[in-house]
Length: 245
Image 1 (tube, rainbow, N blue to C red):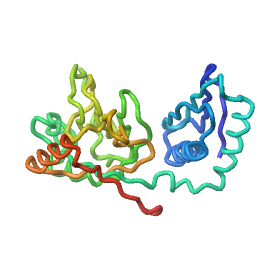
Image 2 (image 1 turned 90 degrees about the vertical axis):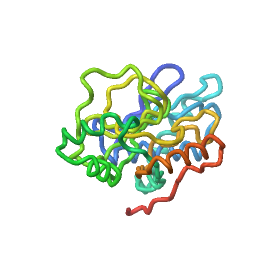
Image 3 (image 1 turned 120 degrees about the horizontal axis):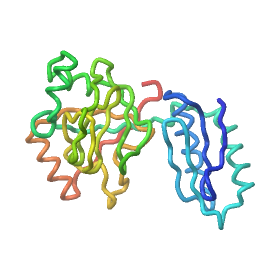
Image 4 (image 1 turned 60 degrees about the vertical axis):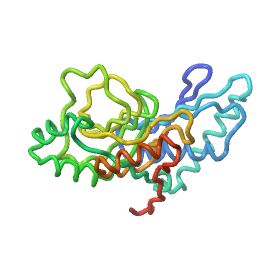
């Protein structure tokens, strides 16, 4: 494992692990985030993981910068003995109503891939999806591992408005619009609860380092979950994934 520690202004340090999208590289990112979260230090403001890096935001008035660099080097040395698979041990199970007005591009994906809509849904839900990072908008998960037969190009003309909680395909990636926004990914379904809720803990349902399993529900179950979520009764389904899964 090799990494570069780089300054990024007066309030941020950037740890760079590589130049490509790779499960092991992202595993190092998530593991370093986990170490720093468990061994919090005074002045730490926020940790922001990406595909291949971790940004560490801090309060420069309360942080000893030399001590922080020393702490980071110790943490990076710890990674050599860290079980990277443990960083992605949490799995979230997400219900989705596919197609219809909630998935206006499902038929287009089926036609592009030469699969039936049922087969598109089946392969999407069977894909071992992994959340490399959140970004673009609050909580938007960038999911790798989608079945390659589902790859479909983004829309030539992005939509001005995509409803929150819409599940999508963008090229080789899967994702979900956690808040309403413009966007050009192909919309194939919708989750019946808020993927981003600033009043909930955790606010972001699908977080970087998690595995994601979507599963289809009919409209009756969709509406039932939606009502439970609005009443605060619905519990998001998290499980612990076997390290060798």
